Length: 290
Ligand SMILES: [Zn+2]
Image 1 (cartoon, rainbow, N blue to C red):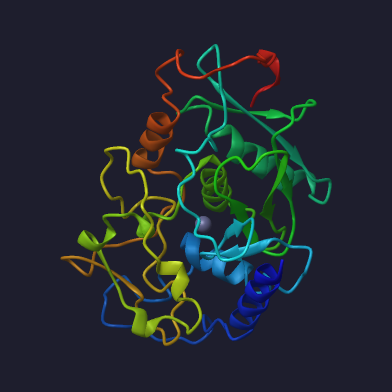
Image 2: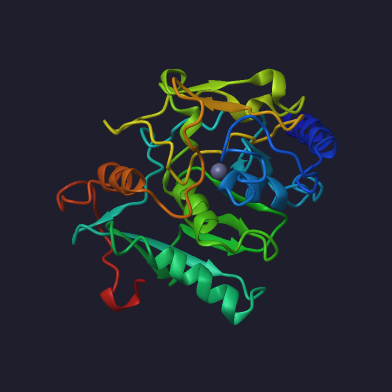
């Protein structure tokens, strides 16, 4: 508990020191990769929406930009080895129950539902309205956009703030966290693909660039992943914080939706082509999924 409070205080202070300079106009030496060009990158949108995260004591501790952490400063390690996958049904689909708060307008709700539904066309993930299941995504407009990594047990908050988070890219990004995925630039092999410029990172925000022993599922590093930060993420001085290597001019973190590799990973992690692994004893009525 003391650790939690300490962590919360530390994070609160670091959030307070964080300001956005997006209104200042200036280009840098990376043609087509200026900070203005990154205005709509997932990480820029999330950074803006999350400027007040941590100020509300009811909110969970949020680290790594938008990952909710259950206790203290524990790393958001991939938990998929330890049982945080959502269970697979006998029919080969993975049914993920959800509830959407009534805080949203019909239009916002539709956008969220479309974001959830987008997984059904390319993966075996099926989002299904909550119907007495124990574990579910509790989609609410809290302060900012954030999610836990993987299934946490019982209702888990997935926050999509009405102002700033209702975009397809962000909905898919937060849902991918809930399915068990981390940010692309925290991948175990990221140093072969990007250089992190910690000298340009806002003091106190360095943890966002910590490397994690991820399961990479035999998929290549993907600059176009919807889980990849933009090159100016958490920059304190309008200089890049992430540079692709060897070619620093390659665009990164600009995805507006899941990339083909994001989709491949979901299919691999949940063995979408197999109906044999880890059957769920409780089949879900087929007409309920999205
Ligand atoms: Zn994230």
